[in-house]
Image 1 (tube, one colour):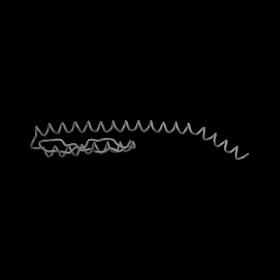
Image 2 (spheres, rainbow, N blue to C red):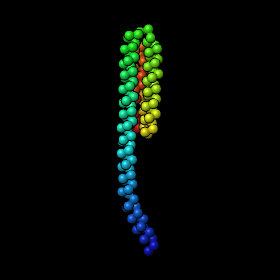
Image 3 (cartoon, rainbow, N blue to C red):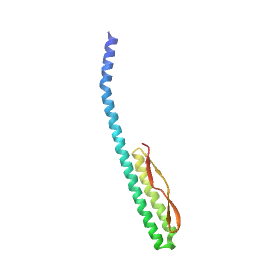
Image 4 (cartoon, rainbow, N blue to C red):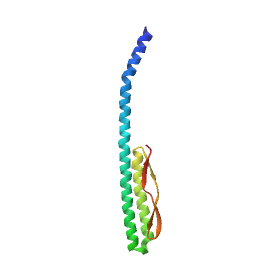
Length: 121
């Protein structure tokens, strides 16, 4: 009789716990989705800043061809800082950001700049 009563109580407890676990799982999935959207927005903002810096550097290189190497050096330094900060924020949200280098022409030089893509979901 004790075993039967224990089995009944255990089955009842499991029946009550399953919906609560499902709800918790759905909340976690929603939070992951929200964090993913935040991570994508961070990458998009960083990429927009990088694109703007590239455009400015291309223009500066046309106007000041004698300073092309310094312009490129400054561009690479600033874009690397932007990428590093964005990657750090994205990792805090639980995702991985990867730099996928693109080649730009600045003052006749090919320069590899690193826009971001979010992975991990």
